[in-house]
Length: 244
Ligand SMILES: NC(=O)c1ccc[n+]([C@@H]2O[C@H](COP(=O)([O-])OP(=O)(O)OC[C@H]3O[C@@H](n4cnc5c(N)ncnc54)[C@H](OP(=O)(O)O)[C@@H]3O)[C@@H](O)[C@H]2O)c1
Image (cartoon, rainbow, N blue to C red; front, side):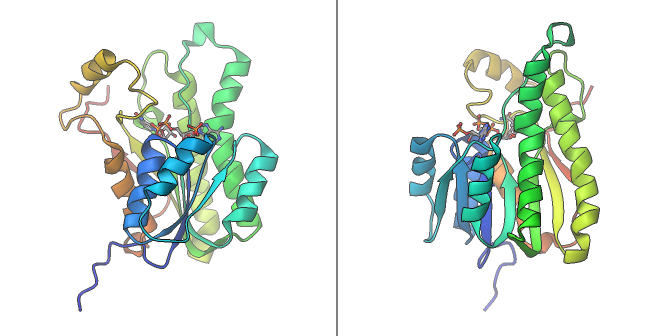
């Protein structure tokens, strides 16, 4: 019988940021595609809400703030053997350079760059990632475009992509892969606090505002064996917005 190759059956996938938005959708869609999910976020109630929506059995939720080393280490210990990880946890980071504070810049870099990279370091050092594993980072088109006032966020995502390309070369001998997804605006709590503002932004996207599932389906592609030759790349999900 024909088995469709776009599936995650038999795989265990760690999803960060699974208590909200894109990470939540990644966890739900990956479970639908057959994966067992280790899901993590900071908010216990919302993480439990995602857990309750997952198809299949054996999923495990772990509450952790990934900017705190001990909590990140506890997550690694709980994760066990992994075939993939999607680093969806992140925060916004808006400040014109003129008003920039060092502590703010540090907070944005800690959450969006240091936390996913140091978690990856621990997953590799403890051999929690199996040979053949796929690592997916959540970047943004902000890593590639200039937008006034978005500097700290853009810098954190550009740093993530730069290091992802180096990581891809380091882990290729174990048939592991690293890639990034770079969406334009996606309708999640990160950006949908002011609906009028978001509607104005949405009008700039010829293919419409991103939905969390758009990103989740791309994550499934990068996690699945069908993309086994794809590494060190970023996939733009920009909805056709002109990059100027
Ligand atoms: N939405 C967009 O327009 C857009 C576009 C491009 C890229 N992205 C990227 O996509 C990723 C997901 O964004 P989203 O839109 O889904 O945002 P979201 O709805 O605000 O969700 C962010 C998630 O990250 C978690 N998180 C934040 N800081 C954390 C920390 N220190 N430790 C552990 N977890 C932490 C949150 O956990 P709690 O809620 O439990 O605290 C939440 O689950 C981010 O990296 C973002 O930069 C988003």
